[in-house]
Image 1: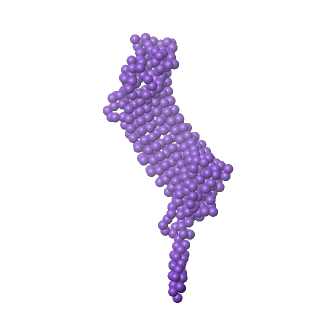
Image 2 (image 1 turned 30 degrees about the vertical axis):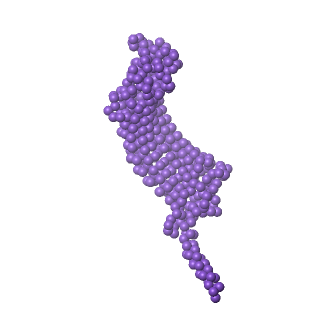
Length: 413
C-alpha cells in the first residue's frame, strides 16, 4: 500500500498538468497569425523574382511552414502584435533589407489593415504603387525610396491621416503632387525628390508639424507656395520654379535651405539671409539680380555657408556679410558684381573664413592687405578686374582682359 502512494501522487500531478495544458490549448491556437495576413506575406514574396532573393536576405528567411509571428529566427523584417486576449496575431511592420529585390509590390498589401510601417527602400521594386495602400488606415511610416516605381503618387495616400513619414524619393514617379496632401496633419517628413513629378507645388501650409520637405530634382514649376512654418530643412533644387522667394522669410526655424538650379528672380533679401536658425543657404544657379545689404544684425544669426554663385547679381559686394559672426564660407562667383573688395573681408579672411569664391565677376582695385598672407583658404579671385599678384594662391587663373574690364580699373584709381 505504501508503494502505491508515490504512483498515485504522480498520476494526480500528471492529470493536473495535462488538464492545464488542454485548458490553454485553444488560446494557443487562436493566438496564431491571422490567415489573411499570412496570405499577404506569401503574395509579397511571390511577386519578387526568386533569382533576386539572396540566401542571406530577409525574404529568404520567410518559411511558410512556420507561423510568421511565432517562428524564432524566421520572417526577418516582419513585426507583429501579440494580443493578450484570444485574438490572432497581426502583422504591423514590414521592414525589408536593401538586398536588391526585383519585382512588384502586390496589391494585396492593402489587406494588412493593422500595418503601421512599410519600408521597401533601396531595392528594385517596379510598376505602380498599388492604390490599395489607401486601406492601410493605421500606417504611420512609408518608405519606398531608391526603387523603380512608376506612375502617379496614389491620391488615396492623402486619406492616411496617421502618416508621419513619407519617403518616395529616387523612383520614376510622374504626375503632380496630390493637392490634398496638406491634410496629413501628423506628417513630419516628406521626400518626393529625384522623380519626374511636374506641375505646381500645392499649398502645404497645413502641414504644421512638417520638419523636412525635400522635392529636389523633379520638373516642378510655378511660384513658391505657402510653406509649413515649422520647417527645418527645405530642398527644392533642380526644378523649374520661378518668381520670388519671399514665402521663405516666415520660416523662422529653418536650418537648411536649398533652392539652387531653378529660375527664381528678384532680391535676395536681408530677411532671408538673417533667418535666425539658418546654417546653410544655397540660392545658386538662379536669376537673382540683387543681394540686399545686410545691416549689422539686430538678432543673432547662425549662418555658416552662403552660396549664391551663378546668378545675375550686380552691385558691390555686401559689406554686411563680414558682420555675420558664424559665417565661414561664401560663394558669389559667376555674377556681375563690381567695385573693390571691402577691407572687412580681409579681416574675416585672416581669422574665421574658410572659403571665399568671388571669381568671374568684375571686381576692381587692390586686394585688402590680409589677402597677401592667407593660408589654407579655399577660394578664387580669378577672372575679375583686380590687381591680383600671381603669387597669391587666390589669384591663380588670371584676370579678365582690359577690353572686358573697360575703364573699371581706371575708375578705381
